[in-house]
Image (cartoon, rainbow, N blue to C red; front, top):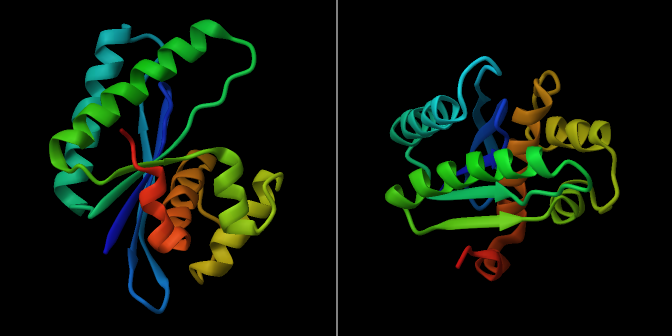
Length: 164
């Protein structure tokens, strides 16, 4: 099965794709969809929509996994990132019903074994699990690959996290 992970963002939306067999996950590709602050919000959302469409058509994932959003302070940022996430979810829902989400803590727990691991620990563990020569960059792409790995690690329990 092919799993695509998404780390939602308005300025930078990370994505990562892994292939999974019974033995182990295998890294396919990762990257970002980037929008510019000088663009209007509708233009930025349209760019995310078309970028997601291109990725889905290119990689044809069997499951798509989103990292849940967490915001403590900035409401405006939360609304804009929520809009970007909504556009990405809507585009993915046109392709498949196999949409899942995990919290940042669940992702850290699944990848590192510790729900409060720092970013460097998660990135290093991704590198080890996927036998990569170097750490995935940028951070948003690494976070997306971590989300995909979480779904792989969840196995049959992944169905408990399906978006409804």
